View 1 (cartoon, helix red, strand yellow):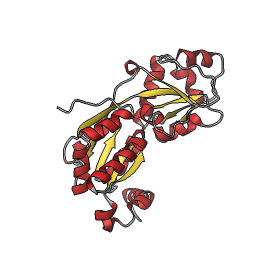
View 2 (cartoon, one colour):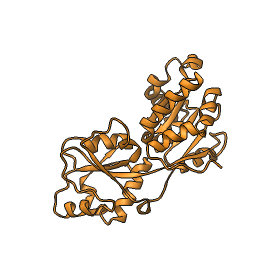
View 3 (cartoon, helix red, strand yellow):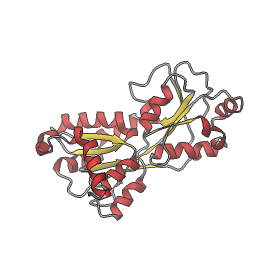
Length: 263
């Protein structure tokens, strides 16, 4: 009988099969790069610009940082990891899975969003949300799952800071990652959600939807760190280095990320 670890590896390989197919053609298909879901639109643009400038392809795969961490620990064939919480990078480094302890590439922000048609009042400290909650007028509020998604954990921290966490828990719906949480927040019947600023700044965000940034003082910082994994090849290493340059930094800034000093 196969042991539990073997079964887990098999499930992960199956889940990653569409992205990892034809791995023998790595030189043309590009390395698998795992990125936190808040990077969905920014990373797609980064990959396009990098390929245009260098001719090298990159294959991004998106998910919550905690789930990607588990996949890497189970042997998933990623070469570069972009985590929304640097702690996952440090844990991988301590486990000997990385070439070093990585580099801080951005600090993320969270926002309160309301879908088209929602009358939820938006203010940074979420006082309007609290008033609607006490009046029994909050239907569903979407956040990423705090158990494995850094943006969900920061949403929980902000709701606690506003004194709303216990009262709002029955109305919460959890996305597996922050991108799915945004889908839930914009769905019919939802009052709104707490998601990544980078996602609402994407061109696909509905014009009729609204958002307001939540103060960084209401939660722990979203220190986002990238790291090369053991066995990373030339393209992954080149992409890692390119992301420190002015072109990549300009793209990240446009999606609302706070950039660390290059020094």
